[in-house]
Structures are given as C-alpha cells and as structure tokens.
Image (cartoon, rainbow over all chains, first blue to last red; front, side):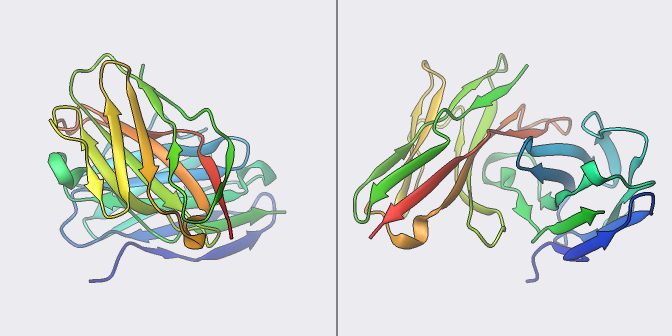
Length: 116
Length: 117
C-alpha cells in the first residue's frame, strides 16, 4: 500500500507568489492533518479534516493560508501570497479513526517550502 | 489546555546502552492517547509506539517501551540496546478525547538523540 503522498517534495518560490501543496491520504483513512515544522516553532498543527470536513483550523496562521479537501483522496494547502516566514516543511498526515491503535497518524514525506 | 513538555533538547548515549527520553503532559481530559514519533535526518516522521490512558499495561514495541506513569503525567520512551540508527529527533505527542471526532494531536518540542559508537 502506498503511504501518504505529498507533492511537490521541494518548492522554491518568490515572495508574493501563490503556493499550492498537495496531499493524497492513505485510502480508507477518515482523518487528514496538515502540519508545519520550523526550527523556531517545532511541529504545529495547522488544520485537520474528518470525512472531508474541516474540524479545527485554529492553527492556520492567517488568512493567507487556506486548505481544502474536495474528496476523500485529495487535499490542498494554499498560501497566497507567500512570504519568507512561510518557509518550512509542511507535512500531511492521515489516520484511520479515533479508537485504540487507530489513533496512529501516518505522515507523508513532507514538502520543503522556501520563499525567497 | 493540553500541553506536552520534553525537557531534554539533546542527549548523547553510548551505543548498546539503554536510553530514556522524558515526556510530561498536561490535560484535564480523562481520556487521551500518547504517542512517540522518530524523525531521522531524512525528515520523515516514523510512528514508534502508542499508549492509551486507560491501558493497564505499558506499551512495548520491540526495543521501544513506554514508561507510563499516569499519576505523574509522564510518558517516557525507553529504548533498549541503542543502535547508531537510533540517532534522530524524537517527538512525544498527545491526543485528547481520542474517541471523539473533534480531537487533535499536539507535539512536544522534541529531543535530539545522538548515539556514539
């Protein structure tokens, strides 16, 4: 089985440009999470979805960030306009459910974003 | 509010020794789950072990075990017989209300473990 797939793996862009990060969760998983990791702030939860519905977006830093999940197999995280302080590794993770061992989150390889 | 604290930013351990990585948590929810993840230099996040708040026994997975002390709100990771490949960042994480659809997971700041040959 393929794990969580993220694209692109690396993105270099200029300040002010729109950036779209993509994620394909593991088939059958009901939960999808977007995280951002930086040296200064560690691993932060940005938003998560349950059955394609956003449940908690309190971690989204500002209105420049938006996330969608149009179907069970695809999600996007968009930054418009991007700023240098958005440079980070963005992880997508999915999990099958909420009980017992199903609590495990499976992480994608991450997208390393650099905004110049 | 829930909180995860990892007080050891970095540790050095001799190969083949056991190592304990500390994690304390704070929550008012009686139901929660605790996780440990490993992040090697390649960047991926690897799930290691899970402990539910109602689990009667400490979780074990191969060389990994979780020393769960509920009254002290600690969930230390123990790695037995450390190997060079264990060098990585280790994150402790917690999910409140794991049986609710409206729960989220938060991560500690991590501990960088370095194994000396």
